[in-house]
Length: 297
Image: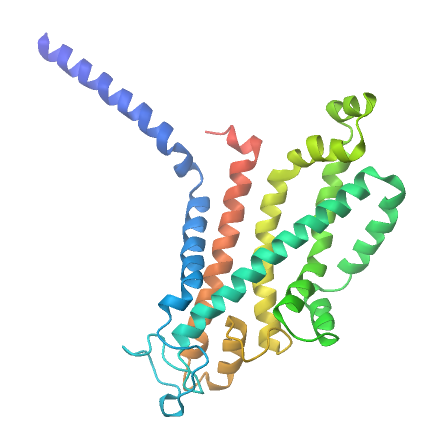
């Protein structure tokens, strides 16, 4: 009898522990892509931010006697065609990609929200804004960015602006569709009926209900910005060639693939890892912030 009572009490204790433990780790198990993407992105961002301290060489130092050497204790990722340390240049190149991703995502989101809410709530501006957005979307983003870079001087700011403009229509269309839905909600109509001004309604009632899809969209725009920046630099119309970026490193190493594949290997791995991490983060945020998915077991 005592053995039965002991086993029953032990089972109850184990059940209580199992109830507490899922409550603590259920969210992590439910959104593994969010956790993996966040960890990968934090690692890449930490390496990029700490480039001045982690880099073993000056990324601009040229050593003709150490051209196209493989990985070694002195050069972790080897050297390029000019004898520059690939490891140090890859770390510094990550800083450019992080700056471009964050800047483009923020600028695109702010412009898209302003234009999209104006198109959704101001009827006379809707047609003009959306026709301009349709015109921008008719041109491939990479071609529009190349055209903008061709008529301006190459710099980091120019690259950010050139990438932002083609990405704005995606956010405008999203915000406009959300605005058309939200403006029919009862709480928005109630705010109108009591004489609340439109800017106050947009700030207090409309914008908070757009944050979840906007955050997800911003992550995908950041990933696209990293790829476009690398593409522009690879084509020679992005960041100036003397600045270490992943795109510039792969562009400089493409002529030596047969004899020094490592020149483009490591920047390519870092580029792919960064884009994958941002996309995983976006997918995880979409699942975590979607109220329909949050109710599922």
